[in-house]
Structures are given as C-alpha cells and as structure tokens.
Image (cartoon, rainbow, N blue to C red; front, side):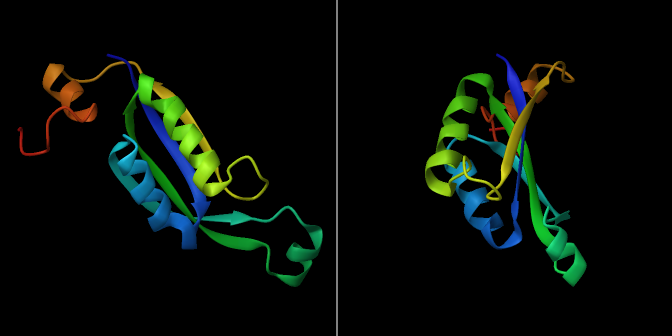
Amino acid sequence: MRLKLMFVIVDKPNGEKVIRALEEHGLHHLQAMPGTGTAPSALSELMGTGETEKAVIFGTAEESAVSGLYQMLEERFSFRERNTGIAFTMPVKSVGGPATLALLAGEVGTDGR
C-alpha cells in the first residue's frame, strides 16, 4: 500500500465545503488550519486588500485515490481556473508499523476498529 499526504489550499469561505467533499472521496484524517495568502495584483496590494484568509487542509489517501481527488476538485470547485485553490501531494515513505499504516489508510478507525 502506498500513501500520499495531500494538501489543499482554498479561500476560507470554501473550506468547509472542500473538507466535506475530500472526506467523501477518500481523504482520511483531515486536518485544517487557517492561513493567509496574498493576491498577485499590485492594485490590491496598494489598496491594502491583497491579503485573503485561506483554509489549509491536509490528510492521507491511498495513492490509487489521488487522481479521483484531483478530478473532484476540478469538477466541483473549478481548480483548473485561476485563484480557486491549489492542491498537491507528497509521498509517505515510512510510518511506525502496520497498525499506523492501516490507520492512515483509513482501514481502521481511531478507536482501533
């Protein structure tokens, strides 16, 4: 089994909707934290409106589920369009034993079942 750690960054108002959709499509153990981003527009920076609140979301998924997650983000949240969000993955190279691997893969719940 190969796992990926997926990161998704969206505007804060879309955070909850994106989290629910990611859970439905196989991202496990989601965590979210606030972030701040800046718009690339020089005019926005001049007016002081360039910073936007973000939701930084991350969780684990089996490698086979990642393409479906990306496709869902494109279809439901228009991730191919500019300024809608960004998503990327990193491989999980090792974990602390088979129980941890099963937990991160979503094969068992946090209560061990």
